[in-house]
Image (cartoon, rainbow, N blue to C red):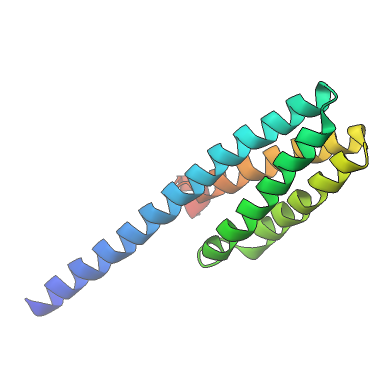
Length: 126
């Protein structure tokens, strides 16, 4: 009977950690998508200084979030997102609008892929 309780406790622990990871990933993805959309709007309206400030805030929040995500998500997608977020601020500061728009759209794609890959779907489990 002790083995059954231990097994149930272990499964509940794994399930709770998985749900925590999924909710944290979802929260980050929605937050980032909103910020990147705002950066794109600022860039389209010619307010690149505000876009640079928001990109700097995005980069800071990502460096904090990445440290906890590295425990349960593969390293490559996290590194790709880190690379893109570090470039956005300087692209906005140096008025490189086409490259800023391309990188922001690529970041949106990477963030959505990150969340889609963490969902407990059959295609992700196989």
